[in-house]
Length: 629
View 1 (cartoon, helix red, strand yellow):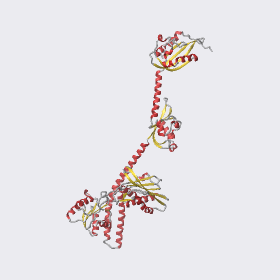
View 2 (view 1 turned 90 degrees about the horizontal axis):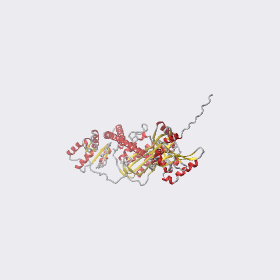
View 3 (view 1 turned 120 degrees about the vertical axis):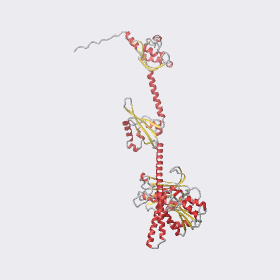
View 4 (view 1 turned 45 degrees about the horizontal axis):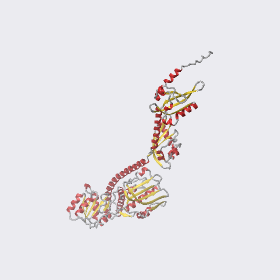
């Protein structure tokens, strides 16, 4: 095997090294004597420090230091260390010839000859001003960013590591979640989730979704340190380094509980409006239907009453009685429909609600089986209300019967009342009200059933077990009385129905007129009803003049010398109601007795004329006329 070629040592002349050092322009490379005086100078030193070779040779290297550094003895200390240890490195501000500072990275090395004798020090300086300013700008930017993030109090902004543990925490996070930084740094962010969400791995799914999709956003319930829940809008973004490696997550949370509650209130108001509009439309339809049905019942009942007077045959009388009873039951149904539609004439009285509840308690208890208890909780200082006591009692009975069918065995009902002040909710009601509540421990209702319970004929009971008119009567009575009804129910949590009835304020009562009845002017647009009513009045011994339109009634008044009673339907075709006609006739004859009748009419409410509801019977018509004699 051939021997390797001999190693050649290249000896470069001293001028070559000098030319090499002198050619370096990015570094200041020069020599100092042991006392620190400059003894050599390259082009880099001239470019960086600003001195020419002639200007700097022989000067002490402390000329490059700032006055503060010279005053502190920094140059001497650097020289002493380099001489003692053979090397010294540092960085700091230095001065150019023109006095401008620059940031310098320096090295000072002791130089010795072949015998080890010190001959001087090599000084190397690099201008790092741009890098220094860039680093300072970065540090300032990071500091300002930290101040910015920490100064945000409306958002919780914090960082998670790759496993979801908290590694930073701002003041907004402390304000929203209630934890100090030292309490949560290192803890897993699932700490803020509800137990059911932790059990369902909602925190883990959020982090996985952020990684897979590049971002995750959602809203949901979160938990503060004190256990209080709040509705949070959250965003999770993955954080990656310059190489694209996943190094953590950025987490932003905002407390939007007030917004959610406002949205819920808005939705509740919208649903109440829709329900109110729906019930109002049903009321219009139901009222019109009941009005027409009342006319038919008036004919049936009136004809039966007249037929009873024309025969004595027992079998026929029984049939006529059955017709009358059927008409009476039909009248009860139409009265409930009219109550729902707020068209049923009410006989309002000023009553003590506490006394009214105590008075009807025995009746309500009688409607319940022995396995169902009814407790009464009524204070003694309730304000007075102005309602129809019969309709109030019917409403309470309907509520009790519905509660009876909803509770189990044993069941428990509680009837109570209290005064309250409303400020626009519910249904825009304002002022003082009496709240009458019936609470049961029954099976409750679903949302779908709650939305329909006040509709007429809606029932969840089996066929033949209920008409579906009980709660519609309650609703109509409450609304017509100037209040409303509220229902609170959840499946398996019972039901509470609350009647809100306005507190009575002193007012005026209707005047009553009196007079004797001999000749009656009958105004009725339905000719069949008019025929039956005429028959009843004639059977009572009155002389009856019949008109089917208001103009016709006025013409009759112009032709005859005397009218002893006006008996008129309220609702009339042609734009003039029976009430308006009565007012016109009263202008001519202020003492004219007036009796109005109606299947429904809001216009008749508050009038000064007696009102006979349809369908009326022979006896009820006779009593109404006798009251005017």
